[in-house]
Image 1 (spheres, helix red, strand yellow):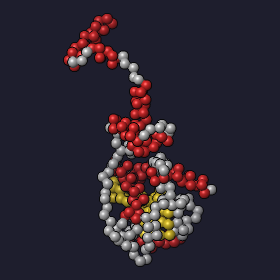
Image 2 (cartoon, rainbow, N blue to C red):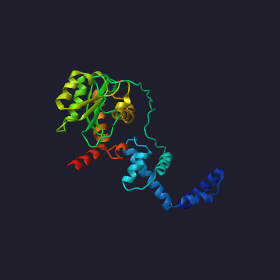
Image 3 (tube, rainbow, N blue to C red):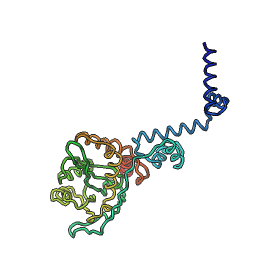
Image 4 (spheres, rainbow, N blue to C red):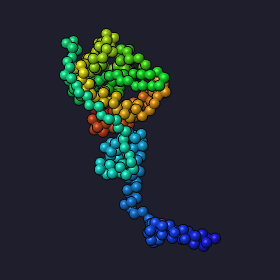
Length: 288
């Protein structure tokens, strides 16, 4: 039976090779071909690129995949990573960039722009930024996320999520940011001129904690670029990729994104490709 099967296979191969117009020797050569060491290395590296890509939930592009591989002891260039991503059809999630044309607005006489787009901080808990963004869910409609970011570590140190955009929501985000900070006196907190941030409730809480309030100019979102950037990344990498059925589902997703991914796993170019948590830990050790 084995002989008959072998002859049948040979006959089938002969027919196929004849139909495809290439010699039978080519088929048999490919059949017994052993991958070269170079081919094995190529395939291994492709798998490593794909692994980093999948672990980031398809959020990383070539630059961050390259940096992650190098940090893990796999020496490679950006162009090499780009070639392997292209060969596998891997692309990070992208959203069309919005070009804002800012008008030359001013800050009201009683609202000072202290930060003045100086987003560098010598250490943690010196400069914070805060803002509110919109997130849509099917059941409740529009919901609102207020976030606070530390400009040194780029870590989201406080946030509050609710179904109404109120001063209470803005205050709660700052309260959460203050939980692990013993002395908040003198910290600059920058926000826009939204009614939540100009409310008496918000100002009273900042005064109580000794926080110094800085304001963006009217119609100039780039004055608060870092927190605007975080909200943009959050929507690109998480919110726009899902349809949330209700507030609770969205809250779980936002918690997981911020606490599990953004703060602890996502490397950030502004802090030398460290994670925000790594940067904060480094600063705590430095000032200890």
